[in-house]
Length: 250
Length: 251
Ligand SMILES: Nc1ncnc2c1ncn2[C@@H]1O[C@H](COP(=O)(O)OP(=O)(O)OP(=O)(O)O)[C@@H](O)[C@H]1O
Ligand SMILES: [Mg+2]
Image 1 (cartoon, rainbow over the protein chains, first blue to last red):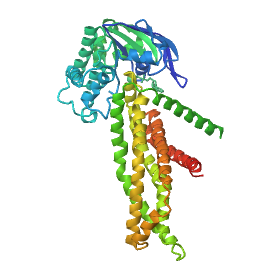
Image 2: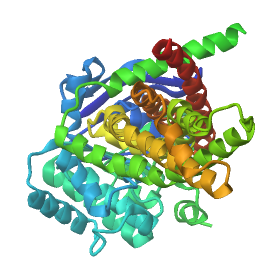
Image 3: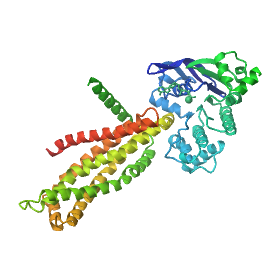
C-alpha cells in the first residue's frame, strides 16, 4: 500500500501539485488520469522521490518515505520498478543488457541466471529475437515494452508506470494493460499507472484518481466513472465524439 | 558584477557538491571496473588519432618557425632542435593537447550525460538505487587520469618527430643538428612537469564537462548549450591552472 498525505509541489512558485491525498492499495491497478500537463508525471516522480515534495507525507506501507536517509531509500528502491514516460532505456546497452541491468546491480545471480530471467521478462512483453539490438534499432513501442520488462525484472513490490501504452497500437496496448493487471494481482504488487487512455481506464482501472490542474478532482472505480456528474471529469472522459454519443445519444 | 560573482560561487558550490557524490564509496566494484575499461576506449583510445595528427603538424610548424626566426649565423645550430623540444615538452603536449581534448572529450561527455538526463536515463538509474553521479562520472575521471599521460607522451614523441621530418624536408636544419638540439641540455624534469599538468587537466576536463552534462535541464536544445558551456569552462579553467601550475612547478 502507498499513501500520500496532503502533498504540495511547486516549481519556481508555480504550484503543480496542490494538496493531494490518496491511498493506493496492493493487488489492484490504481490509475492516475488527467489531461496533459495536469501533473501526473510530477505526482509519480514525487512518490518515488525523484522530485522532493514541498509539503506532505508519503508512506510505503508503514514506512514514512520522507524520513528515510540515502541508504534506506536505496534499500527500498530495490522493491520499486518504474516505467518512464519515454522508456528511458540505456542507449549504450542492448535490449538484453537493459533488462539484466537491475539484476546485475542488485542480485548475486550468475550471468546465465540473469540472462534467463531477462528472457522470461522479455517474453512476457512479447519481445523475441531482439536481445542484441540497441534501443535506437527498435521501434518506439518496442522500447516501451523493453522498459516494462526492465521494470518488472526484480519482481518489484511497488510498480509505477508512466503512460505504459502511449505510442502503442490498440492491440499491443491491451496486451500491456493486461500484463500489468496480471502481475499486479499475481504478486499482490502496489501498482500505480498514469494514463490518459480511456481504453485502459475501462479495461484495468480498479481504482481511478482524476487530477485536474494539480488537484485531486475525483476518485472512484471504472464502474462509477461513467455515472459521475463531475463536469471536468466528464469533459475528460467523454472528450471524444464517440464516447459522448454513447452516453448522451445523438 | 555582484550577480556574476554570485553565479560563479553558485556554480562552484554545486560543482563541489556533485564531486562529493561522485567520490562516495562505490558499491559494486566489478561494475565500476568494467565502466573504466569502456571509458578508456571511449575517451582515450578514440583520441589517439587527433592527438597524433595535431602533434605532428605542430611539431613541424614550431621547428620551421624557430628555424626562420634564428637565421642569425651567430646562433648555434642546435638551437632549433632545442627550442622545438622545449616548446613541445613544456606547453604543447600538456596544455595545448588538453585544450584540444577539452573540445573533443569535453563536448562528448557533456552531450552524453545531458542526453541521459533529458531522456530520463539518469532518473532510471536513481530509481534503481544507483548513485548515478558516481556510476557515470567516476569511471570517466579515472579513465582520463590513467590514459591521458600516454596521450601526452605520444604527443611529445610525435611532435619531436614531426619537427625532425619537416625541418629536414624543408631544408632548414640538418638531421644531425636537429638531433643534437633535441639532446642538448635535456632536463628530464620537464617530462614529469608535463605529466603532472596533464593529470590536473585530465581531471578538469572530465569533471567540469561531467558537471555541465549532468546538470542539464529541459530538452535537446539545452544539451547543445550545455556542451558548449562545458568546453568553454573547462578551457578557461585549464588556462588558469596552467598559469598556477607553471608558477608552482617551475619557479
Ligand atoms: N522539472 C520541472 N520544472 C518545472 N516545471 C515542471 C517540471 N516538470 C513538470 N513541470 C510542470 O508541471 C506541470 C505538470 O507536468 P507533468 O509532466 O506532471 O504533466 P503530465 O500530467 O504528466 O502530462 P502528460 O500527460 O503530457 O505527460 C506542467 O505544467 C509542467 O510544465
Ligand atoms: Mg506525464
